[in-house]
Length: 341
Image (cartoon, rainbow, N blue to C red; front, side):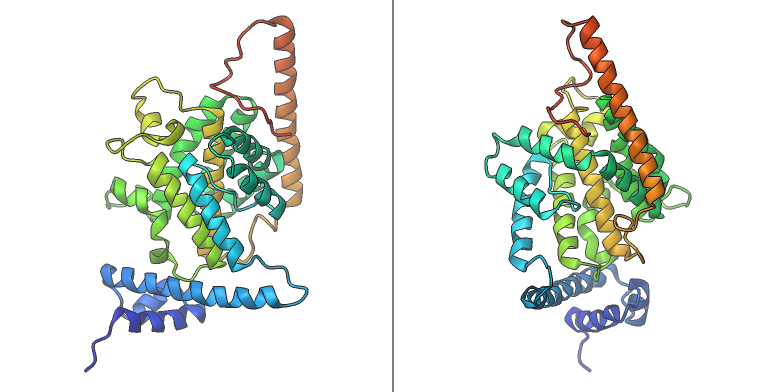
């Protein structure tokens, strides 16, 4: 009797997943209970799904009157994000082609252009409309929705230039998301996952869903998010220092007096959470993407509220400058030039 290999199982799993069977159903049907075997099978399936998607994308690019990002452009996006992750940044999944081109231009001048990239990303990712869309995305997802009020609190604090509060509010949200995404909510007898499990969770995406929606872009944002978590936010403190002190460990334990709750690091957190939400949506395949099917009345209400907070903060800053023209600006460490409007 021929031995059943991971390759054979991957072929069968690929067929079943393409027929819209769930991961649980596929594993049960193929009797893949062993975690080591599933790790091999799911990785092979993920590569099969990516190969099929590349072929389909090549066809789409050649079709008249069809707009599609080419495989070459996706490869360029992977390379751009690999460069940006050295600075704990990535190109957000919500950017337009024009915005992508601008980020690419600025990245060519790194490291000198870092502040310009941060300012440009700030103008995109923390605009009132994008923050309102992020909030709706969190509220839509079963796993993410518990953190909606914390995300909104951080948005308000950010607009009030209270970057310390914004940063310290968002840092635990990242770990909370990963834990719940991993199936741990503290209510059962199971122990909390080990640090390395949390640290590497996002990168092990094929174990959760080897056949996600829009797999090529899923791959882009899994790789970028995992790089930021591994190299920076969740970097083992014994192996080095995170770029710009973008470190969960430093924030949790206040080990030294280095500035970490800065405006740039708040931007980094907003971008990372945006990317994690996108990865989750690709994996869970909702009937509608809340980013494109928004509750418009709620969105407009939130946008107006955020704009009022920004206006109040600007008025306060103007009054402060008028009455105390020589007072130092200590709102939080090192504000950058572009503000959301």
